Image (cartoon, rainbow, N blue to C red):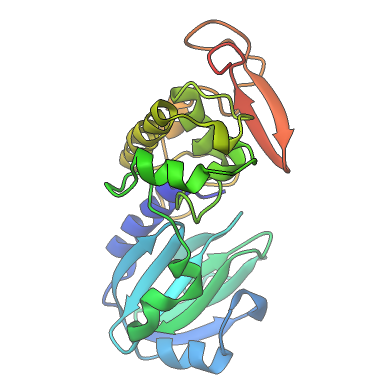
Length: 273
């Protein structure tokens, strides 16, 4: 699943490839991905250009040179491909944006979980999908005090809470596992039991790990591949994720894997007591 580092890599790559290219046509092959009026979706895009691409959490914000912006969330398996308009449409290509130079920006999604919508620029900050997001892992606003305030009275596990986008925006399963290992915190510890020092370690680890992951182009594993010609390298830095039954790089204990609320937890039972 693309997380904040992978979405940031997609953002930077798209900026190099599609900005200021006039849109000639839009072909919607699976309309459930679109969370707004379909006529508005086409009307806002056709004849317009993408002039910038921003990001908030895992949401891409593709700015148009009119009154609208396009929001896109890749969810579990979403990918963008840049192709010639003459290339055959393949299975799972659901949204095709065609530019006047006869290139296509094609949205490919095996599981069809991704979402797109058009919003007016003057209401962007009030869009429900963006308004509810918490601070990002490398934001200066993400402090130990902020985190403790969000965790107080929470009897949910810290691993589950780190996946809550209203607390920290952009952390997913991979980086939550890595952050907790770096912070030396057991993933099954309840949020309300996290101390000030532990919160400080979570903030520090979140900042350092996400900053490095972005620099390395994200993590290329099963659900995130180089669809735009970019392959992430952060998988080489993973300390616990996908390393079950391997030795911990710190203490030599065996990394364990467990399920928690449908997500897989990887951790070192000795380093993360």
